[in-house]
Image (cartoon, rainbow, N blue to C red):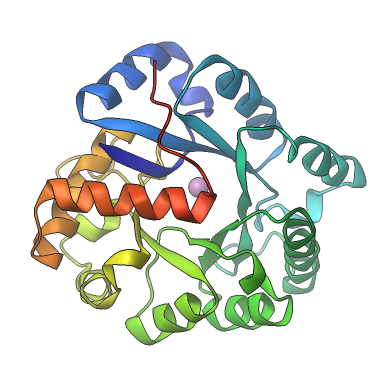
Length: 261
Ligand code: NI
């Protein structure tokens, strides 16, 4: 059974066929997933989903691109809701230098504040890093994020950086891009990451794996990521499924008891 560690099935694009999406996930062998809410509307939509379905866990946090928009009200909304029993991580949070909507200084402040909150709550982090690897690593180190660890989501850097994040108690999560033709670097990195530090994800509705690149992504397709990863590691799909599920359980401190129903 597969564990998709990063989904946005709370996105409006799934409103029309939500139960079909979950059905296809089940048919593909995906029995658990994390639903990530990282702005006001998406955070609001996490909880009705968690309360309604088994096998679904949640993560909430404020994304870096919109760091300038985060109000005290938003911060306290996140703080309060982290105590929900099915919230297993704080995220996705981090740094994104691709977009210039939020200045770096504001992104750093919002990132640091949320890491401190996670450390205080004892919750692992889900980290979004785009074109900001050096600063991401430095801030995680300075804020003692290693005390809670977490996930480097949709990892796209090289192995030497991956090793630094692993030393900080993080797992390395691969998504659809691992299947892209031009993703030699990701595949090389995946080949080097120890099996007990690997996770898989879709980041749906984004980043559909081949042969669906450019189309709306959904949790069922984490199977294509798992197949690619199994090929890279030279193990069976069943073994990759088992290992990455166990890693997710360890990372998020959750048991094997529940599945999607
Ligand atoms: Ni995401």
